[in-house]
Length: 407
Image (cartoon, rainbow, N blue to C red; front, side, top):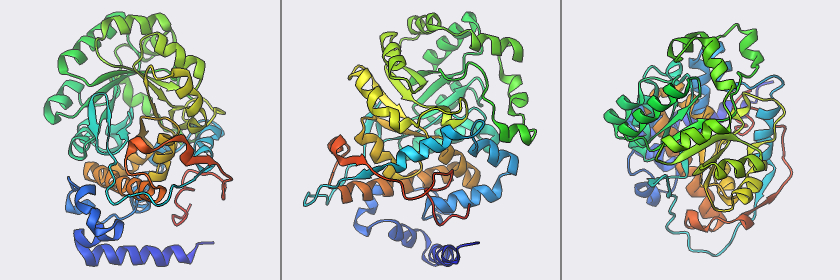
């Protein structure tokens, strides 16, 4: 049965957006006195109609084909991994400080030598150009406008990373699927260094393609479209990535002179080994629940991975993060930043790169509000005693963080 309270609230939100224009919309999102700080690079007026992320998600679901919605939003097999990501976040509660001066909140941090307006980066999506035609050019444009780091997923994403960096000036992480041989790797690394990539990333959790049964049932085959971007035949490219070993990582570390990110780690022992092999950033990820089923939620593994790394590398995390409170929880458990994937895809589907900027602005407002109510005025003051285990109040689900959004 549909919750009529959602319909009434939704109508109210829409009326506010229509009647108030950009200034009134932002006033509804956060205190007026904080707007200059929170929105120093506002998104275009066409995207300002969104005052909550749930509106963006609702429009994305209406805009996308059922097959693309399922591809972006689903997980592998039973989707246990996907649900555990949300369950882990819902199983933490805040223990706020009180009587702290929070009249000025600083949500910024640094990552890879770049200042982030909020501790959020744009995760790599292999088929991002299928969600919005601009591909990585669009996500990089949004990242540059807002003030964050963007990942591109290569060789599957378009346009070429050289073109993206030259056109946008955005700090771009060239995140690799290891489809090529050593010669291809060396050439790609040389190109990334010449182009001025902010970092090189290596995807560690994709030795083979996960069984995404929703896509299989829909006969949706994105890999067929991606075949033209693989350096060899699909069979040979798949063989190359399935034969990746630590020796491959050592080769990459010798060739690549900048920061190295290993993405796709949920095992503390593997995090330590990656740092020993020369990784500068450990990206805690279970591929959004889209690869191996029955993995732990990433937020659950974050503290033990931070401990295993022991300050020798930064730690970034993704996996079900859709709200500012989610981000603050990750920072409390030791993450440097949070990477957003599904939320990014929904924003692009709803309103293109301006929608992505607007979504980041909404996250910024949510982070600002959470920090102020927790009594912490800057990111550096977010510590582990700010959170503790708590009992979830609802069953986890893809959209369970948005109770006003019909499932």
